[in-house]
Length: 81
Image (cartoon, rainbow, N blue to C red; front, side, top):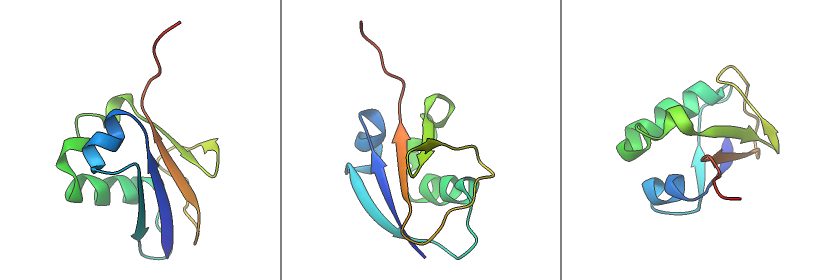
């Protein structure tokens, strides 16, 4: 299945792009996407403890299933005031 990954700030730097289309096996979950991305983009490994993941606009944990055409956003913490 194809999904769209959006990355912001430091996550975008680690991916080398702010948007990527990826092909994952049917039935993949957020945890599977994380493993795939860490294998392809090792710089993401250090960021995961601080990243939030949103699937189609909703914050999602590692067990959330991904669907064909979904949009996954990698959201680093926001600072400022």
